[in-house]
Structures are given as structure tokens and as C-alpha cells.
Image (tube, rainbow, N blue to C red; front, side, top):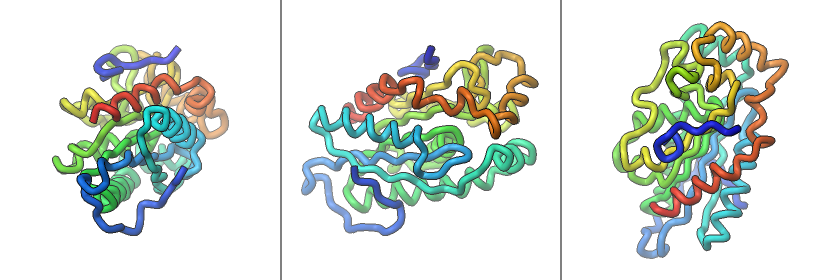
Length: 246
């Protein structure tokens, strides 16, 4: 089954995030289109099947509601599972996360330059989810106010108490609070499939088993790579609904 934390569920045109474009004020544009910003996971790049599936479903559902959207797929560095553990968990080196939050900040700025105020829809998988969590913690109030909805999948920052926690929390690198304060907290959705060792739902206090299974992801990705097989349409539907209220 799909596991969602309580609180608002715990609660194409693809472009790069580089060149800035002239500002179009919302009054002129009759409301800015949604800018879907997708951040990929480990051992993959911006062509991430999980992120691409989420974008396709989001765009389709948004179009049915008469909503316009565009996509930006961030191409932050591709890391293997071994590199992830080496750079982020074993050595507690946050540099890959910090660098990628800079890329996300640039993408948000570019979206606002394209049309203001921007309406950002942030979707992150695995490492990409952690990057979103980190950026939200450091973003200024203006950028936070432009976030229409957030969806994180297989998040290393996942926190469901005794039921399981993500690798970042197990390594004492947890972001607190995990759920942003309201009103953004009501538009924040997190999904962790049971026995996904990266986010840890269902492992309880079995930290040794969770890290063992996580280290095996390089050769047998299993549940962590099954978010597209386990339909995410329901949470994408929630994403569209949350975005529509912004």
C-alpha cells in the first residue's frame, strides 16, 4: 500500500534552468502558468522515469482543469548509490545537496523573472526530495510564498516516528521541522513506500537492516525504484488540487 504521513497527506515543454527571461507581470499574463520543477534521484539524471511520470500526469490533470504549466528538469550531478553513501552519509558531506539547492534557487528566480509572481510546483525523488527539503528551509519569504505545491517521493528526510525514518535522519542530518509551517505545510505531500530503505517506512528500529538494504540498492534497487510501478497518480492528483488553491 501507499503510506502517507498525516497532515495534508503527512501533511510538454521542458526547459533548462539557465537563461533569465524578461519579467511578465501577472496582471498582464492573467495569472502565471505553473512552473513544475523536477529534481531527480540517485543513479539517474534529469530523464528520471519517476519525475517524468509525475510531470506527464501533472500536466495532463492540470490541462483537464484548464490550467497551464511548463516544466523545468534540474540536471544536478548524477550520483551512484555508492557515491551517495560516501559523500552524504558516511562522511556527512552536504556539499552535493548544497550545490543543488543553489540550482533550485536559480530555477525559482528564473521562473519569477519569466512571470511574476511565479507559481512553483516542486517535485523531488530520493536525493531530489532532500534537496527540496533543504531549499525550503533556506528560501526567503518571497520565494516561499510562490510555492503552489510540493511532492516528495522516497525522501531521505522522511519522518514517521516509530514506523520508520529516512537515511538522513538515521545519520543525524535530519531537517526539523520536516513539514514546513502553514500555509505551505498544507500543500506539502510526502510519499514513502513500505520497505523503501532510503525513506525507511516500515523498518521501525531496524537501523542495521535499513542501511544494509540501502547499500544493496546499487545492484537491486527494488522498492525504491518502483514509484512509477506503484501508481503515483493519486498523489499527483493531490498535487494538482493543492496547486489549484494557490
